[in-house]
Image 1 (cartoon, helix red, strand yellow):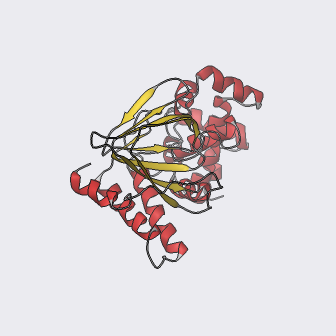
Image 2 (tube, one colour):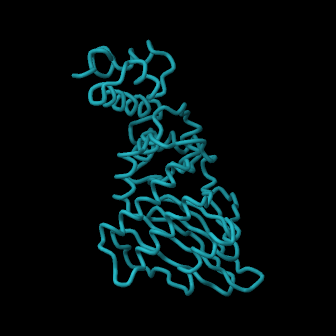
Length: 286
């Protein structure tokens, strides 16, 4: 991020304004973190989708696996609900650490993924990196949202939320697909939410586990305890998506198959028949 973009966001982090231990409001919230000494926080758990821009100094995050990732000045990360790890905030040579945090409530993220979960997904960062590129477009959206959340007099709540939804849309368009919970109500639900963001992706058990910050063995054990599996969830979610595309949107069988990750049309047709009892063509316009 260039100095001009950095200065635009820095005006919202003139002083430390971090949340206390109380429950977060069910609306977007803006926080600023300012520290003059090195801070280390263990067992940090992210409860709401959090976009964090490092404006001065360096942030280090360590996952439970022990993987260390460093975010210097001008970089950003998107941590999803359910992320657990330790955090170190290191002041710059000038003796100050500053970061801006924009939090999004779960219902806002769910609305976005339901409406746009399969759109605007370009090349994606490797799962688990959490890194976000502060492009001019995303920085514009953050600046607009932050100005709305700090306006005096306050903006109407719906207008402020609309500005924050623009940030989520900008993230999704930039390929930041890990906006939703890691494990909202269980492993099966987490896998379902992940698959819904990209039903056409060639998901494997290893790929799903990596995206959820779990080992493949741990994911399989948790799903088994819940009476499910990656294969079963993939089939169920893809069939549900296919029905929606065929019945409501009127796509062709070939188009629906490709949108659901099936390169083989006969394989796709077999899955539909097994789940619905009819051929895909029988669902079109039904």
